[in-house]
Length: 113
Image (cartoon, rainbow, N blue to C red; front, top):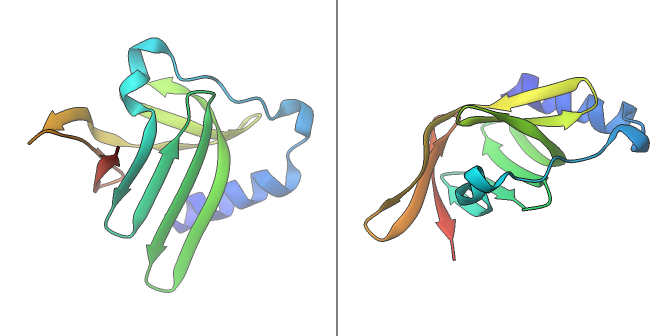
């Protein structure tokens, strides 16, 4: 997780604005759009491809705004230009007890309505 934070921080510092074009969320992945929260993690995926990510862990806090670069199965990539980081989705968005849930990087998230 620290590697992702450092990689994305480097992207934010080095990226050229002309390369920073988010990929909109495709129609078949529309269930991913929204604000998701879980234990010490917040993920906001916008339809236009902007992704906000916050995570608290012992000794470090990550707070990033990055661009969606695309999906690979259930997983999705964020970053700029050729520098990317993958969010691993072990359980894609699904309804459970009337709420939308998904598991990203080992954290169960619930979509806020």
